[in-house]
Image (cartoon, rainbow, N blue to C red; front, side):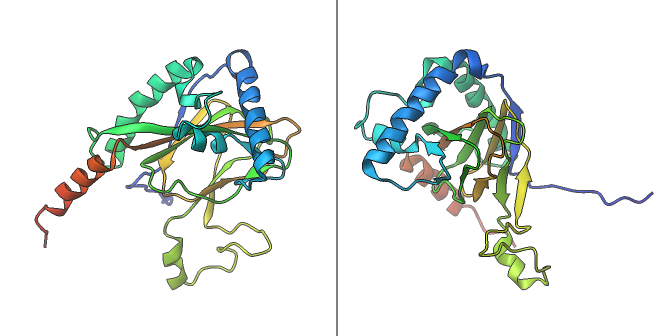
Length: 238
């Protein structure tokens, strides 16, 4: 039988597994961290990408980068996550090779935060501008906790094709086929480029969903400049 074969010669999204032992090792600290974030958000009357009751500690990471908030370190600096950090550091070169990047380029875990989504909460559409690699680590996903949604980066080109009317999202809130669902469960770690637009499905469970995000960036703009300069000097091919 001649079946249609799916080919993916340019893979951009990868997934691994990691046992966080969330209930025993991380949950109390994570909840305390998110309470601090929620208090700060409310005190500043801030808008965040988390909707319907979701809370993100990304607001604290902004301050911590500028040494303005020191009561908590960012998650990638926590001693409880030291082994996970080693896991990430070992995984990065492997993925960069798949992306045909220079695996030896200077890079750094520049930022990290945690989101919590109670029932009905979700993260709205966004990307991580200027970030080499985004990492979504699923500390705890209850049954019916919702999946990760990634937007097809070729969507702008689809306007030149006779697409079905359900392909593009509607203003009424219906997601179109330009969004692909990545199934996630507790212990999943998803790696994707920072430029990929992404969001989450609503958490349909009565239990909270806990997701940790890490950004991997070039260690300095100088490093990026060297890489771009090296690329620009390559002879043009016919």
